[in-house]
Length: 419
Image (cartoon, rainbow, N blue to C red; front, side):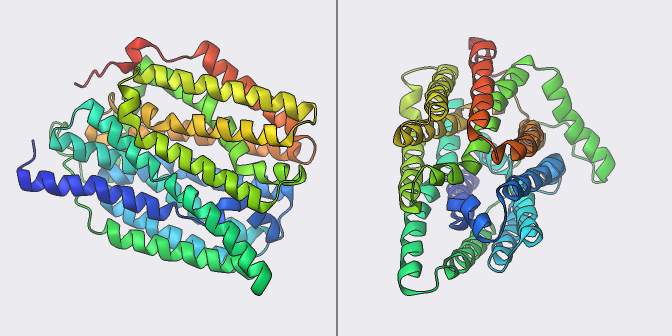
């Protein structure tokens, strides 16, 4: 248990992590990212391939970067991520064409890989050192997750207003340069705030110290993470459930803008929808503690999965019949809200089974599988993109149905073996 003074500093860690995550996710360019790529001269197929390159970068660096967080320190890796995001935004401010865009995408992929699991690991380990219980950890993880979505509620209206101002009074194309520079400033501010974090004692549950040499350290950290998953069927089931629901829908979330624009939606209406989605998710995650008093965590996840499946099924039926564009968009927003709201609950369940000394690496193993699957989806769907978006939706519905029917979360998935 931490001393009173250290506990106060660790509590500041939790609050600062929220704001660091908030700042690095205030990406105005990413509000309408596929339209930004299109404005930079990329075809629909190149847009899918650019996303695939970014996802492949995350996939390749997922475990090495988390190993660095466990061995080198969470604080240092977060600082590195903020620098990479600053570089990415500066590249986007001048890039035009496929390969310059890919440079920015790779920088973003490296930053995402570094941050994947590291924020959660640092927050959980800070809370554990303070003596927080499972409910407090789940609630704080939900607040941390909401820091990913509050920026969406803010950035979409700003993007829409900025696009209108530039189109009316300035050169419309310059709006993207301005947004990219704003994103770079946000990332640099996040770097300053991250420099004030303190490292929690995440190696306290390890007998002895992690070796200083890289190879022996890898055996301890990565080997321990592999053993955690191989020896725990609960983690495997949670992982499969998550990837079947989240990965296919994320592809749709990245690439939906052109589809809805073809249906007659303007950038303003897409911006309003994005702001609504971000606000609802953030407010829902802000009330996690209240939801957990109504039902068990696993039941919340299962209900959200069913809502995703239902809304995607209705959207797919409407899309195949080429009817009700507004109904399709509402179904899309509902599916996005439900699938993202489940994230802090799943993260809390996973972290009940992880040790502190390799928590970031364990968190990243699930992301590793997700990114591997996502690369396949993006490459495969790049060939469907020019034809029928409806086929993509059909594949997404099939994957979600498999998760709901064959891999629902069960009572034993809530057990905390490390308690």
